[in-house]
Length: 114
Length: 114
Image 1 (cartoon, rainbow over the protein chains, first blue to last red):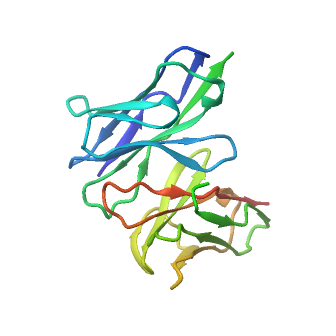
Image 2 (image 1 turned 60 degrees about the horizontal axis):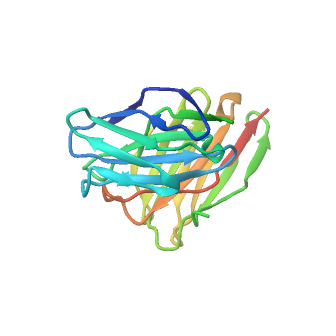
């Protein structure tokens, strides 16, 4: 069965410094991977998705992620954190079978310190 | 705005009661997913409907049921409610269930059982 592991439950960075949120996946087939963000008391918004077209994926708000098959990783990065980036981030996998729902990681809470 | 509408936004009810949560997907989407988000369990997949038919079932209790109507809106029925059912319930939709398609999430219904 497919799964994702988010390696940090909480990450704290200073405003203007880089952000790294780590995600490892497990999938029997070539996966489709996503990052979603959830701001307090809000729904889930798609940041970016990987679907095998390119290993480096650019998303909204300056975020990007790199798919590394050899490391089974899909880490989310941003060069410079902004206060508005403080939120919960979820790494998500969808398997090749297509009938599988989106499987969520447990989430990483990002705090940005002024 | 994702285009997915969930009603009501908040619901407070007593143990033993029954409630119905409603979801209107994006106009072009045939797939509807229900997820439960709680502090201890994270985001758990409940059930997936595609064009009126159940496609996949996750960790959905027997006290819970769902359906998707001909106009593609969906309802999640929760009965014999327990304190532990208090959670944020999300509906999401997508055009189909192909591996490359992301899901669009509503703002959620926050259920509090007292």
